[in-house]
View 1 (cartoon, rainbow, N blue to C red):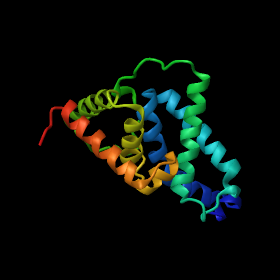
View 2: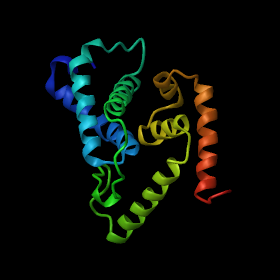
View 3: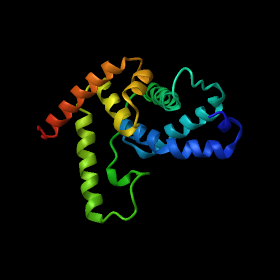
Length: 174
């Protein structure tokens, strides 16, 4: 990590690795590609300016960058008094989407994602944030706990309840 402070290529590697993760978490919250682009851009600007302060003895790098992203998102919501309208999935940049998908599979995936986002909106804020960090942010329960100042066990319980509620909302009871 410290190489990235002075080495542009090392920073580019960090950016390439963490961009899709941070973008997916932010987009899941704002549901607007332009706003997500702005927030992610601000996040990586803050990361580049503060990379020298990263201390691996206090948190993992993924936890550190996730905290910056969440604070940047919080700053956006403070600045923006209300959320703007939803964007259709067809308008969304999907950094991890393979180019060789068929139109039919892309349409089905878009419908499933839209259904999932609508279901996520029915969760309480804490449950929604934990699900997003777990699946879009690809963080472990410990990293989520560190990011949100919770215990890993508490994260596990909240995640379990949120997933149960999502299954119920989506009509996928086992």
